[in-house]
Amino acid sequence: MSPLVWDLAHIGQQEDLWLLRGGNAACQGLLSAKVEQLYDAFEHPRASRVSLPLLGPAEARSYIADVRGRVLDGLERTGEGDLFPYVMVEQHEQQHVETMLATHQLRAGAPLLGTGAPLPAGRPVPRDAVLVPAGPFELGVDGASEPGSLDNERPAHIVELPAYRIGRVPVTNGEWAEFVAAGGYDDPAWWSERGWAHRLEAGLERPKFWAADGSRRRFGIVEDVPADEPVQHVSYFEAEAYAARAGARLPTEQEWEKACAWDPELGRRRRWPWGDTEWTPGLANLGGDALRPAPVGAYPAGASAYGVEQMMGDVWEWTSSDFHPWPGFTPMLYADYSAPFFGGDYKVLRGGAWSVGGASVRPSFRNWDHPVRRQIFSGLRLAWDAEEAR
Image (tube, rainbow, N blue to C red; front, side, top):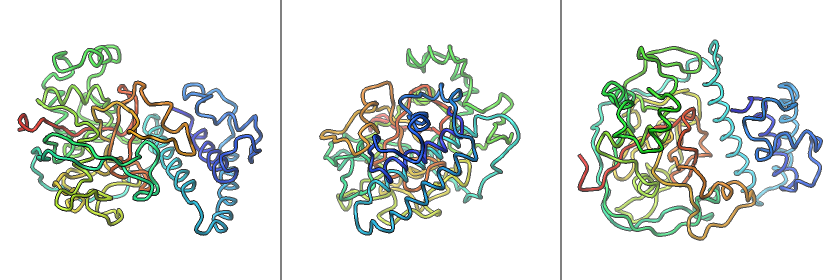
């Protein structure tokens, strides 16, 4: 991961670039060119950033305060002009705040962030599979219907899917503990060839931050693993193995989005699983304040039209899909946001997590990461072909 101060100044540098200079990197920003290039994510991969001569914490805070003040002055003059650059930069900031939370989770030492805001209690929920009938639906969005959507979410297009079933709720810690106890990490029968090779090389035995005694470390706090929370900090390869042992599979991202956003009675998309009203804290666990997933059953009002729960927030959910553009893809003004990653070794995750700000999550939002990644707030939901589901 990057030093926290790199992410902090990078947030300001991107805001400076896109909102004060209109994306013109040749135009002088508030940092010297020599300093600004330190915050180029492509020129300086994560592993190299710790050795860079970065701004110190006080300097970084002063810089971002200066940038933000100038941006707010400019926003007052923008009026009803093009607000997409502002929305894009807001989402970029929220994504890096999530990255900084992941960095905090990795650090050793005393807690710095507290225990987190309270969450609603869970409730008993059937651990069954919800049928999504065969038929077409609208995958993706357009700028008119979702002005804040990013390029890889567009354009909207019709996709035909066969019938399938999908888990009503995400897989929980308690269910994952049963997988561990049953030797799921020891039996190559459940793992793909790549996944098993990685399990052996990395010595995986349980989700990241879990201990053998049934405890976990969460932002410096050691506590019992709550059985009713969605499991997090598992890689794609682990999720794939768990699903195989359960007689299931991971959903494709198309299946995930249909179960989340499609309203079969109205024959159209919803903006959110629960409808078209904006997110409120009673509908999903977003925004980062909780510092953990909510127990399953905590958000009945947030269910999708099919009755699938907790598809927004709590944990990013691995899908089986590789990261590719939708047909008709057109890069946005930040042309390198998605395109350099298409066709690489990336799997798509959906749904956001507790760690994500509300501007950076929606049913069409596509996250992607390497299949070995597990420091992220990632979990899973199972799927089945219609005739195979329990």
